[in-house]
Length: 88
Image (tube, rainbow, N blue to C red; front, side):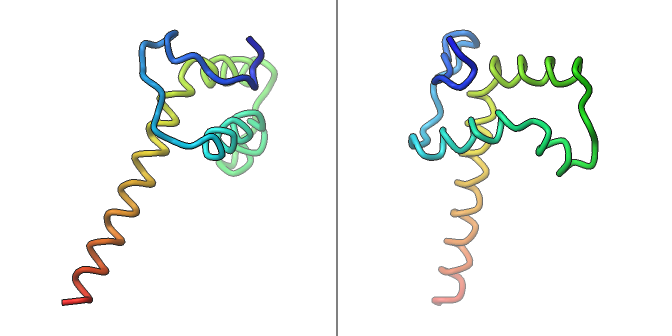
């Protein structure tokens, strides 16, 4: 299995997050560019750190996908409450 192929959730026993193929591909592209993530966080990665982060990203991709889905859902629900409040 290559790094950019669809992750197998069976490695961690976590079911696949309910996100579409476009969102899954976006998250995989982000994970493929660990240096950009490090720059956004104001740090750098040496070869050892990069290898560890790549491996963790492969193993725990689905956990991150669920986290992204949860954040998007929370954001949309909070916007819905604001709309309801102002429509009263």
